[in-house]
Length: 101
Image 1 (cartoon, rainbow, N blue to C red):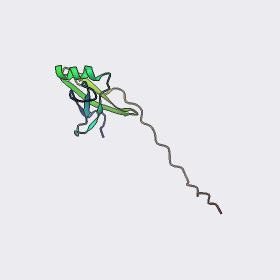
Image 2: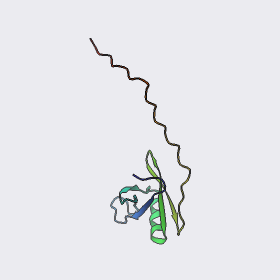
Image 3: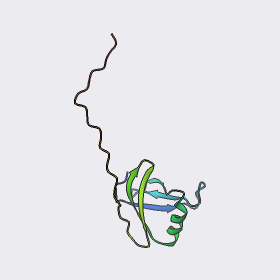
Image 4: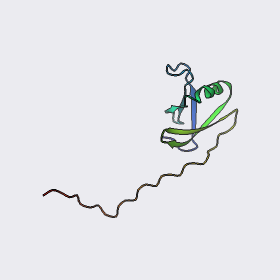
């Protein structure tokens, strides 16, 4: 859905019934890809009201995604990316299944 370094948009959702501090994350294609964690949302929502916030997609994670944000006109940068997982090699042969007689 997103590639490392692509911009993402952070949108405060003060009328969100689940959390008045909710901050949604949108891809550069305008698709909502998640929310900022509830622990960080109040601070990020406050910063969205007070200063310029720029964010980029960093990488996919088991729990969702990691983004990087910078404030006050700064530009976020990619930190060290996790090593990609190598796929299992294809077997050299495919045995026939054992069929009952």
